[in-house]
View: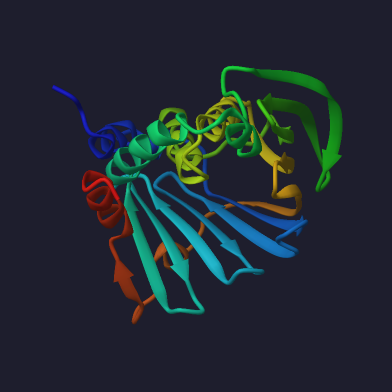
Length: 241
């Protein structure tokens, strides 16, 4: 019997209390998202608040759900891991039938990839290992601090990376990129991404703080309209829209 991604997430998070403590990182961003963003990591949650778009991404690993919180619209879009995978698997299948020039414009061949260490650097006062990931037309240079640990279990984080890759465009190239990113040791403190059409985006840590994060940080805001976007997408894909 096939085990759902939600159930898998629950099983993978069963030993969360034995993992590293909470982690908060503030980034300075350049490119299309100028400004600062903050990422909060705990054993059960990950939250990414982006100043430029007034939009937050909250992932609940135990429930297997991703939320997009749009403060300007006072709206929350909900997507379960199961619904996301089902919707984007269908989308990915249709994308693979696109002409080669369109696939290249959106990421290229996922099976053409490399992961190479290219040196050392210091970010936010912390020593990092720098790695370059190339997947088709996608390129990401990552400076990671190997002494830091994401408190979520490695298995659950890798699963989240696969879902994140699908949500980033449905293309196999993005899925591969985030899968390879999840395998790097430590926590990324600087990423330089170069994507077709989008161009270059850089996020560099300016503050790293280890210690407990208040439960309120991972709470959904009250009074916002909640839309089950994942379910809606899945239903539309089933109808062939």
